[in-house]
Image (cartoon, rainbow, N blue to C red; front, side, top):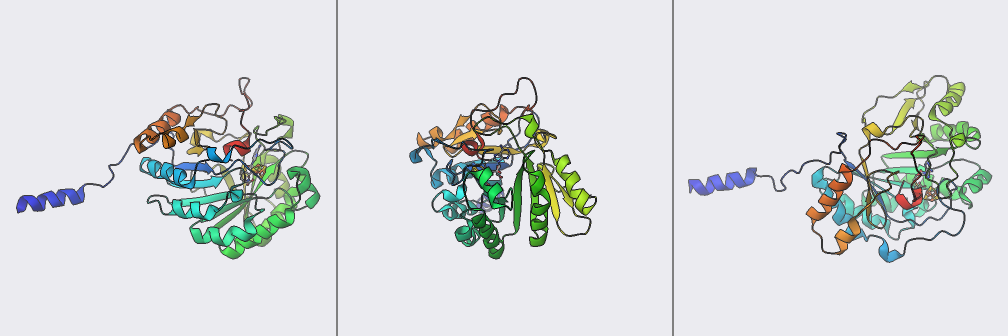
Length: 349
Ligand code: SAM
Ligand code: SF4
């Protein structure tokens, strides 16, 4: 009797899932954050990302199914992956995305799900995404002028993005950020109007430096408008910005409060101030390739493991291999830097 009770007590104290060693790379960086691309398709053609013409998308059968994505995430949670971001291509062109959000939100151990979108289809999907368990949204907005929008995206539709932003605010997301890619010769005129727009709507605005990930390989250092350049413009209008406390050392953005207390603004400076030393991100492409960096030239084939009867341990071993091979830094600006073959829309930004 006593033995049975002791056995039961022992059983109750044993964790159901034995803890597994976390995903730490050769430089001591612990990986907790997974960015999942759900498609390489997009409904616009931003010049800093996609080619203007002749895009060849992956055949649909190559894309991971929602069930495959969910299985991949379930396998990685015991290794410490607990933050997810859905991206693309444009994630909202993937049919029934709220169903994927719901599947992922139900995975025990997933603490946070976010989405990055161009906002074009958000108007009709915001409420369903919120309902499905999405907590945070990043909406890309580079300009408030239709003609500039068309120059950047080679499509019409700023009004749809603005309607998407309004719908997201109505749906009551915990956090909505606006992301603007900063490009010298283009963005200077947009800085103040975008900041005014964000302040009025109580949205956080972040500027991201243009990275060499455009499909046409036109990126050059001359097009770099740095976070410091933009900060100077903002401060000339609103006075000195106040550094915001940094709650998470792995967050790529450096955030500031406006001195008048009306809102905040952030800068993501991967080129002028690389933050690789604190990187905690892994990526899964739409067709199931694991990448340990945006600028990686090597990929690990999780789809093959998923589709050829591999176990969860096989998936974890593959991901560990990828993490172990992660380089110290992206190396932009160094003589041996090569822009990756894949552009941003094919990786998942
Ligand atoms: N289609 C969605 C969107 O645009 O928000 C999600 C995918 S997009 C690739 C993710 C983010 O990457 C967007 O904020 C986009 O502006 C940014 N981006 C794309 N190409 C970039 C580049 N070459 N340099 C910096 N940011 C880039
Ligand atoms: Fe599409 Fe986003 Fe790339 Fe623009 S940045 S072309 S919206 S995937």
